[in-house]
Image (spheres, rainbow, N blue to C red):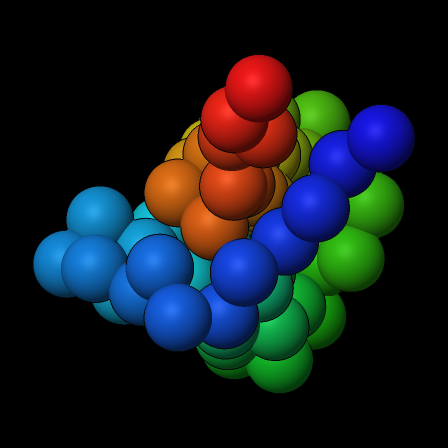
Length: 67
C-alpha cells in the first residue's frame, strides 16, 4: 500500500504545499474581492494549483518500498 514518510520533506514538498495553499488563498481572495464565487474562470485556475499541490506533495512524501 502507500506509505507516507514525513522525513522525506524537501524543497519540492515545500513548493507543492505553497502551490496548494496559493490556489486556496487565490480563490478566497477573488471571492471576497469581487463577490463572485461561481465563476468557471476562477475554478479553472484554482483547480490547477490545488491538484498540482496535492499530487506534488503526495509524490514527494511517498516512500518506495524496498525488497
